[in-house]
Image (tube, rainbow, N blue to C red):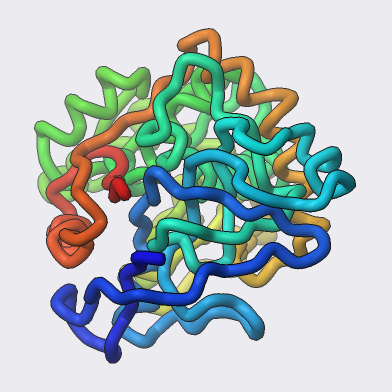
Amino acid sequence: MNAIEITSPGGPEVLQPVQRPDPVAKAGELLIAVQASGVNRPDVLQRKGLYPMPPGVSDLPGLEIAGTVAGGAPADLAVAGLSIGDPVCALVAGGGYAQLCVAPAGQCLPMPKGLSAIESASLPETFFTVWQNVFVIARLKAGETLLVQGGSSGIGVTAIQLAKALGAKVIVTAGSDDKVAACVALGADHGINYKTQDFVAEVKRLTAGRGVDVVLDMVAGDYVGREVDCLAEDGRLAIIAVQGGVKSQIDAGAVLRKRLSITGSTLRPRSVAYKTELSRDLREKVWPLLESGRIKPVIHQVFPASQASQAHALMESSTHVGKIVLTW
């Protein structure tokens, strides 16, 4: 099969086409003929040698795919509620930059009705991540306010739409006025240009001094202390990436006084059983929102898989709004 491999840790140019043996689905897995593969920030980190794959996982990058079911035992097909030939999208721990990929049956979801393979390939990584962190761990509820750091990213556009569809208010930060406008057009109640505005002061102004209930943070570093400052009482901070560095200084007294919770997580190494539970939640509570059009995938640009290096260069430029997708 055709695939894209990381020839050595480095820049986008180390992504090269390669021929690999076809993978074989083991017990508990389905084989998927891939039509499109989502590009995500962890792919970039893996390419740089900073995000190793879990034991036993393909060395090929790629965490989300869409295509058709090409193989699997009847019992495993039943777990996913799928048949051979059905359109499907899946969250995988690696191997997504390829024409064929195996995925745990419990992490396979039917393509939402009305969506293309390209749109469906943009869903799993961001929707699993946002659902897990914002709704399972941070317990965002209708009527509460969510602050999304990096609202124009793939995670950001997902968090905006999902939180709004489920009844929350949303404030976002982004790095340009154009990106702020794009976030507001997607449904965000307020946007903050973090390059020209102090997000702590703006959050306090927008919430009449109360603060927000949940922060979804992809930055960490010195943002953490500032986020503690702009959380309301009983607020929850969910850290999902450390693009701004791993060291933070916080006011521990504020954490105590306001009864704050600070959590962190990475999804890739979690168990198949855990991800299967998330998949069930998404199928029941989120897929209907996609099929009704209340939530729409946001695709910034599509590249043929042979141009994966250009796709990664775009990802690292941070000029995109929404998702970047490869096609096969």
